[in-house]
Image 1 (cartoon, rainbow, N blue to C red):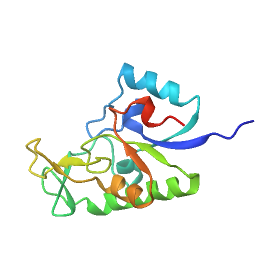
Image 2: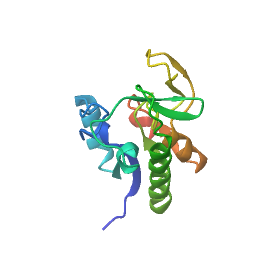
Image 3: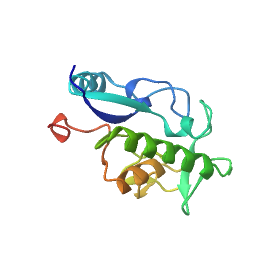
Length: 152
């Protein structure tokens, strides 16, 4: 039996109801893309927030001054750091070269994240998990990826 290369994917993009509000971010298009990817890769579903100990649903959170705060002001940085470390360990243990992560998230955001004002304003930056994976050399894609981005 052929051993497939492994790829990390945000669980919410796969239809798991782990998003902060208890829903998910799956679309018909994403489902088609992931079904195609599954023919070549083993998909490892991750939710850094849940892995870090946060519940679902949970209060919305954003990064401000290198820390993560909920809208009501609770500091949840420790849980985001823990989730990022666990995801990085999973990537290392499984030799993952790619990750498809949810854009703009304080965990998974790649290149742009919300600015911490809870006003839907974006700023340049990476979520905690995306940053940890990039440090390992994992290529980060978001839900708008093309299948060509992952082609072997």
